[in-house]
Length: 137
Image (tube, rainbow, N blue to C red; front, side):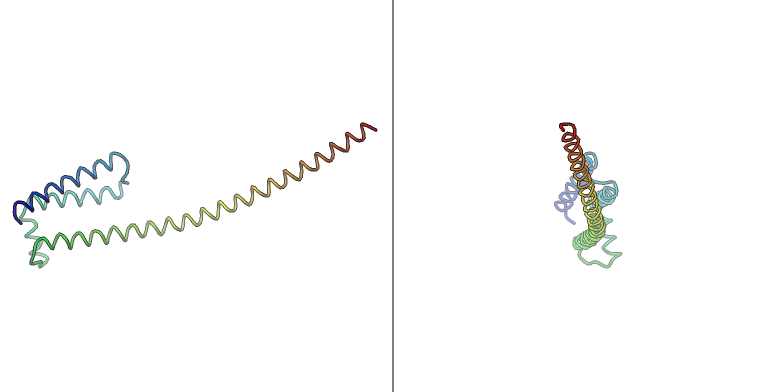
């Protein structure tokens, strides 16, 4: 890894750490995901600062070209995030369907109550009209 690539990686790593930290402070990133992103950010920064770690990981994983190791790790990370988000999306979909059913039931119950109120008002009006007629006679 040459000095220019290392510099770009350090700047990118620091930017990622700062960005994730700001997202946490502004409460845009849930702690569950924040930990994952912070670990990734610091790992990226440490690997960028210490060249030997990247070479050692590449040797350990039998990767000939060190930068391709980062692409491989990135792809694995993205697949993990996608899988996690798919699980969350599935749970939210089930919750939305349940919420829709509850909403429909509440709406139906409200209509039934309104009908009963309307019916009782009609009866009250009829009784009131009848009493007025009797009083007039």
